[in-house]
Image (cartoon, rainbow over all chains, first blue to last red):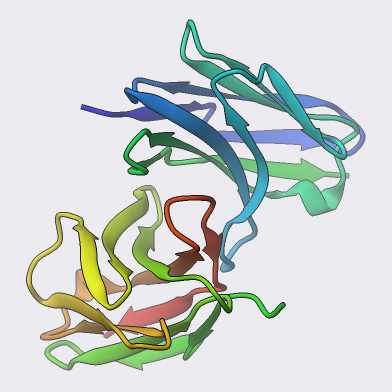
Length: 111
Length: 111
């Protein structure tokens, strides 16, 4: 059964600090992995999308990494801002386009 | 290019009633997917419509149904509402099986 597990479930950090969110998956055959940011009460917004051959991809202060061998991905947030407070969702697609969603990591950035 | 729009944004219903939610995809997108999101459960896939045909279906009871019109706009209907149906309902559109773009969601509260 395809699964996506994210850790931690929630995280509180001080503004200006860095943090790393983890995503482990068992989706096969793998096609791509996406990270979404979802503000409370809003729809998810895509941050990055990576295919099998990509190891890292950046979007501003967000950097995603992918290790297709160990089936792990991480999302690193640099110099966090209050506006980074949101849920971050890892989504993995198989070759048929079927998506498997993680339950997300809820990040809170405080002063 | 306008994003995915969903109407209404908020809805309050009572048990036993039925509800219809609407989604207008990004212009040119042929696929519309619907998701239910509840706290702690993450995004749960309801169904996907492509060119007016249901292409994929999740594990929800028959009370949940949908349809897609020739202009790709989609509606989702929930009959005989239950308290557990209270959730954020998200619609996402894509051209085919590529990246999905999410709407802002409809917050449904069942009393």
